[in-house]
Image (cartoon, rainbow, N blue to C red):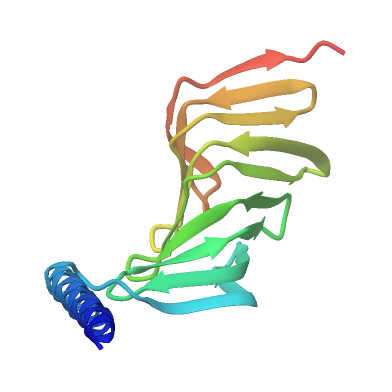
Length: 185
């Protein structure tokens, strides 16, 4: 009998200890949840295609993404593996792909912070290149490269540290450290 009382006492003390541990852990975690801002995924889609089209008199522009993600109370949407297409319906076509991009839908801006690999044609001549960082502002109809641009066109390598282009007028508004070199075949 005394042996049973000792076993039951040990089990009772263990049960009380586990209960105190669990309730204290719950109290600590609920205090942290009250103090921390709550961030939840409100939208995530796999294998869904987002198509954004922008068209004025002279330009067709589209972005496609295979996966989307957005957070509560945010003003942007994350695009995964976005594909960009630009066509002026005359002599310039460009298509590019990146790892991901952010679409700030209140300001109508796409920001590609990862490398963008692109290719296209200008006057029926092929070109390709890479951009370190790209911002497309559809409200102002501009494209801004803020990191290294390398463009391979007709045996030349064109480079720039930054460049701002008016997409409608197809002209450079600002540029920094533009240079070129001839490729040796």
